[in-house]
Image (cartoon, rainbow, N blue to C red; front, side, top):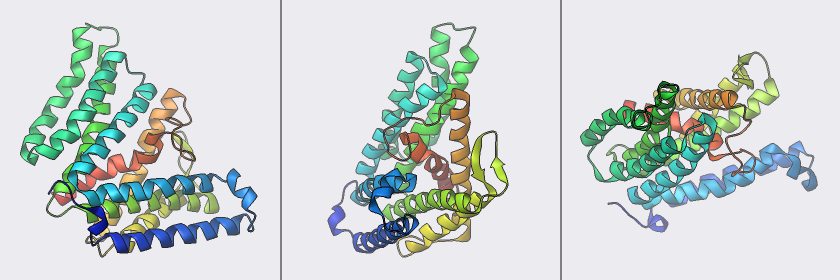
Length: 297
């Protein structure tokens, strides 16, 4: 079934109470950090992120519960905005960006309509698509660089987000898995940020991201485990899944940090208060999705 009524879904009530508990307890924790003074909250990065999460979490939940068609529409929207941000970071030319945006629409739609074996064949064509703009313009000075950057961009956004649709359609996936992954990735990032700030210690990759520490990696694991365990009634949880989410969250964060460092940018954009651009929010998910699908398949 491509569409379902999210308000009648059996996952809605347990998910809703879980989110209410998380938002309420995290708000109390934020108030404790400013000693109950509301006026100081606006200057807190964590509070700005809390407000952004207050919008993102219900939206993603309704998308997942509405079925694969809505997941595909959501994936297209995220891929388009993410591709625009990636194109700026990577310095893609207009023709390269056009190919990336076209596949951002075609990829999730194909994942919705085609069987997995046909999609696997389509992945073989992506590197060829990446070569077309440079070949057609006979760009000998920068052609190889353009092909590389566009080729990675095609995997990074359209292909990875198409896997979200494939997970929604998978017999062992569905809304429960998507919701658990979304919460686990979100809490993994929050715990990494919080633990890293509180504990400090040795840097993880100082040239890529000076603020990330090995203590933050421990926070990644803790957050991933917490998110999956909170929704364990919606999807099976295993130590392997926890490890994949934690690894993917760190990996995805470092990949985007590399892109931003080369571009000399602090954030990928400015559309999400407290985070920056959309890529700054979904960078971990973009790596977690393909890793989870490989293990699930």
